[in-house]
Length: 323
Image (cartoon, rainbow, N blue to C red; front, side):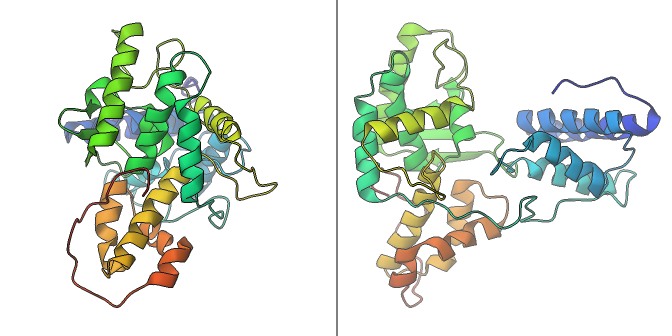
């Protein structure tokens, strides 16, 4: 959404304060690219509608505009408005309204689709043999493999720059994610080798590209391409598509990652609830509620919940396709 002209001093006040907040975040060392984008749009929206303060009406109206009527729209970006509102309270708008943690404009969180191990295996077998031209013929397995192995959000995988993935050091840097806090995640040898091969193949076609994963034109991968490709691979694997929700989608790999680690801890006799802070940090959750949620949707954890025991072994999840 392009920013319209400021209609007056009242509307422009929010835009000016939002710009000052972005400058503040960057002065603290944050890249804050995604946050700056949403706050510019919010400032333009307030200018257009004449909102001179950060009110609930302004915030919820902006969310409705961004959602554009989409069911299940991504609301991970609300953390940017929430952080801006808290900052605005200290900078001249003491009554600025902030989205409460866990706020959902569309009510209760929808039921999630939990991938079975057999579905994951079939999906990656199909991804390895995908016949869809460059670059997805060689990139699909690496893209979704990283999501599955590291619990990344689809947008985090799409926005990775070439320098964010260090296959030799076995690390991937997820910048400016939800919260927003960057995080450095370890990679297994298998995943690192897969990413290194993908990078080499992309380099032969687009040696000067900036994004790690490329679109068919060599630019960054668009948001709409990910669900299209997931559905294509799912059908190629011969997997069943439910007739109603919940249905599988790319984000299902993140759900599986969280539940698989919780279930592994329970099987090992560890206190899974006590391990949640490590999982929250690894997954980049902005609030504890997002991580606790997985305790309630993991059927195996509920069956395998063991007596409390000291946290031991690996504190970070074991990244891999098997979860």
